Image 1: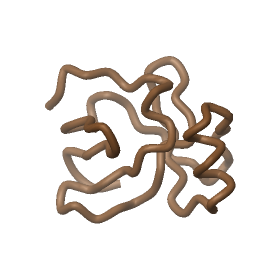
Image 2: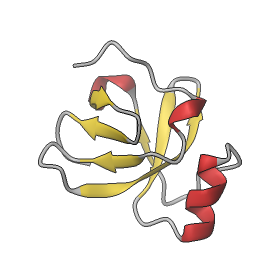
Image 3: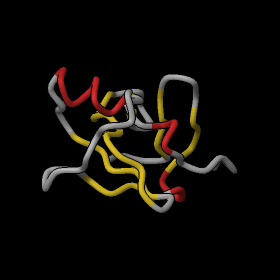
Image 4: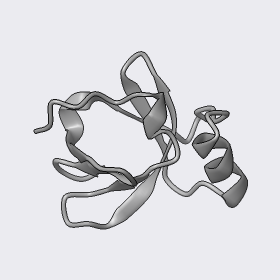
Length: 81
């Protein structure tokens, strides 16, 4: 598990399962919890990268304990979403 914490700078990053399968994108980070849209459109992806994203009812909450690694372009999970 990583010591890195999810922050606003992680918005827009791809979210990958432990096997490398992309499962969505981080659309919002609020109070250390990321919200992952399973299939965001291009507009939602751009908004998230600009820090304008907002979690919808379809977004899955993701906390630091679920994260194995945070890289420059992805959040890798310890398991599956």
